[in-house]
Length: 227
Image 1 (cartoon, rainbow, N blue to C red):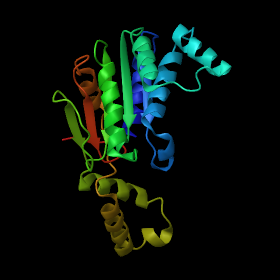
Image 2 (image 1 turned 45 degrees about the horizontal axis):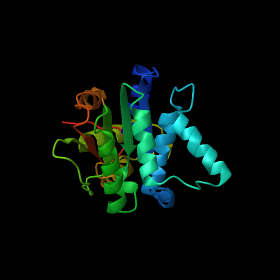
Image 3 (image 1 turned 180 degrees about the horizontal axis):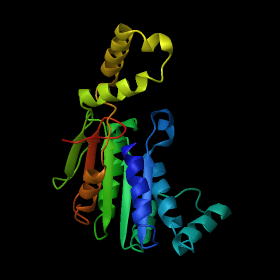
C-alpha cells in the first residue's frame, strides 16, 4: 500500500503532461508474465500514453510493422531505445516498482533494475522500489535506502481498535481477545504498519538527485512508520 499512496500523491501534485509516471506492481501469482521484457514494455506503454495527445512516431512505426508481420515483437534494445526517447519528452519521470521480491528470480530483479539505471543516464528519472528485506538486489553505491517495519505497539493498537467490530462472544471474553491479538501479531511479523504521515517517503523521493540515486524502500508491507 505504500506504493499506492505514493502513486496517488504523484498524480495529485504532478498532473501535468511534463511529468511522466509509470508504475509496476509485481504479483506472485502472475510471475509467468513478469519477465524483464514484459515489465519494460509495460513501462513503455504507460509513458507513451501518459497525458500525451499523440502517440510517439517510433511507437506508431513499430505498431505498423507488427500488424504487417514484419516485427512480431520488440527486442530488448528496441524497448530500451523507445523508453529513452519517450523519457526525454518529459521534464522529469517517476517510476515506482512495488514488491520487487515477488518477481520469481534474482536475475529478473537485477536485470530489470539494471535497465532502469540505464534510463537514468542523461535523463531525470526518479525511481522508488519496494521489497521485503529478505532480498538484496544489486544497486549503485549512491542508493538511498529507507527501512520501514511495524512496531509491536502499532499492531496491538490496530487490533484493539478492531475488536469492537467482532462478534459479542469475542467482545465479552478478554482471554479470547488476548489470544487473537497474540496470534495475529505473530503471523504479521512486522508486515502491517501505519504511516502517519507519508511525508517522510515523499521527501526522500524528491531529494533523489537526477540520474544518480536510486531510492529503494525496504519494507514489510502496507503503510509504513519509520523511526
